[in-house]
Length: 470
Image (tube, rainbow, N blue to C red; front, side, top):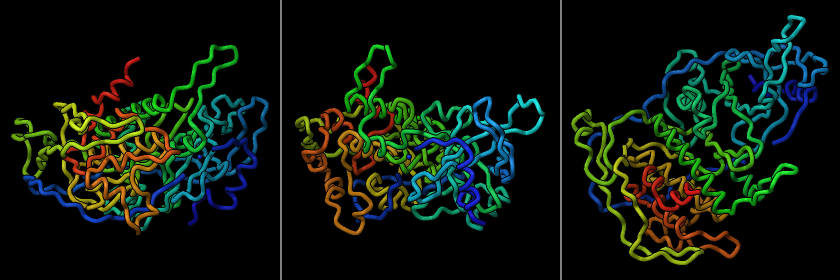
């Protein structure tokens, strides 16, 4: 059966309801040459990963005729067809498609709920306080449909593809106690299947779109209300620091819930409000790491953890900092003795997972993911966040994009050679890269994950601490 919102009948519905406007997609993938390291690591057999997300149940939605009216008190009800959720009872009417080039259909929809004040006692639907939402549609395979019907928790992943059922599970895991939105993660408002073939995810509508669109239109400017004292818009670095601090909070929330994103990029950071509030979304490639015994990323494991660890639960990752390197930036050069500043956070820890099929976008993918070797998923997210920070600060990609997958990748080769002078060399049209930010990016994008900063260490970097000061 065809996706309901893609049917000609559904496309006509938006003409009868008030509508407004909205939001890019990216990323094919490939695998570059395998990297090797001479450092010896002591390993134990790794457990199967990922752990399955907790099982889910999905209701079956149906489309039906409903009486619906606009928000105005004098608006007359109209008899229209809508998709009605079995979970919340809300009705959804399509307004329009959102960037149809996206790999999965996205629709801007009106969200309506039953009017409790209906004096006639009938089921008249009126717009909710949100008014508009985004619905992401994913066609389920036969195996996925059987999984939904049987309630099974996990199935093999496809190479480099979003997993719609895993995305639902990840978002539910992160939205426990309604904490997802508050923690800077796009919340899941509703989810259901239709005709056993289509999975629908209902999410908030972010009018600014994603970071790529915001930067393409120019950095947001703060607008003062009429008669109010105007405040100057933040500089680009100040604005990026505001965004970056929120993304650190988002990754901290994911890590606390045992989830690794593994597809972090500007395309998956959504902007709302005045352009300084963001939320991390698109969890179709996320892994559920769960509670695990971990090894210290800067030395020996904690004795208590080692004693309590079941056989094969962890692998120790000794930290071997790379040799000092001169780092050139738009603001000058760093001292040769400071490869990058490392706080050595005492609680920083690593967990190693079995190799996974490549996931994410080529320009933001860590070497260990491309090489399909055992990896620390949280360190992978740190690498992608470092690439993202470089991109939004300079307006340039840190590594070659997906379009370069069949050709040479000189920037990736420079990364493997620890040649950050080449990586930080910018053309005249690029925005300058501040020295402290360059130092942080170098620590976050080390090719060797053992030398890469952890989330806790990033939070204690001077560039981040400077952003916290008034």
